[in-house]
Length: 334
Image 1 (cartoon, rainbow, N blue to C red):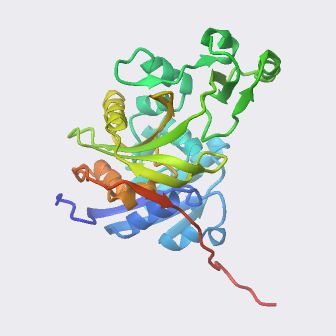
Image 2: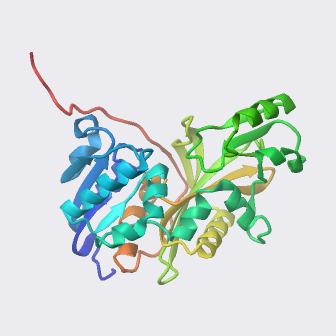
Image 3: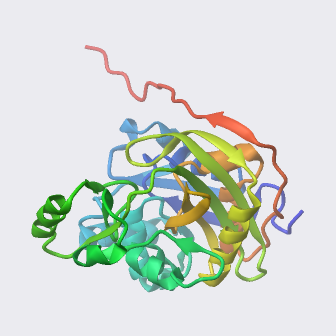
């Protein structure tokens, strides 16, 4: 057992979790709410009584959308100041982008931003930069990617898949069937935000990776997505322990100097696992790793408390499906 105890933070901490209406939120909040010594706060752009997860936190703050960067930052910094927040856990890409870019402002308030280093976040949140970083790597093979204007360099034939280079989940994906589709998208892509990749039909594998940069300890849980939502969140998955994916995930985490928990996505096509994306945050399906027997959330907090994380666990192959439930949040009679 680590010095923090089996489910204790070891010292009194106040944790603010953002976007508690997102898909990973329930797992994150349930894990943290069971930790002794953790005062748990939540925030979201929607009001508390619209969110079933608001019942899992001890305090709630409604924030502006992270699309309005300055307003969002001013508000969340004030919340951190008022609530004496010690640790901040962003759950969605827009918030990760905004918070990571100015994390020194949180540091000045005594707030630990629970994200990988800024250099890691910047690489992971730019699909073309991520590709270029590992295109000649001897362990990992990224899916071939080019800026949209250089689409002919792919030499893979149609169809192609275009996506925003800084996009989130599966938003903004465009399947390009011919040159006319390319030309149409080029005319729309005024800010040159799209990249293009070969369209490889194949299975998507998601890998939750937790790494303590101070000790080098890494824990990996792999899953194959069986049913996904249109924005890329797994509903039914096959949890497995593929040694090839584990090795690649551990290598990537080391090369990016990851500290904390991130999510990697690979496309299995023609006998190869192609690296598609790395999300520098908890995956939408981080609960699947908990079901496999490893608490990514609590151990991520351990990382940022300066404690060692649990060692990797052996887990069986599992098929897991997620559902949903309904709960009355308020009732008003007339």
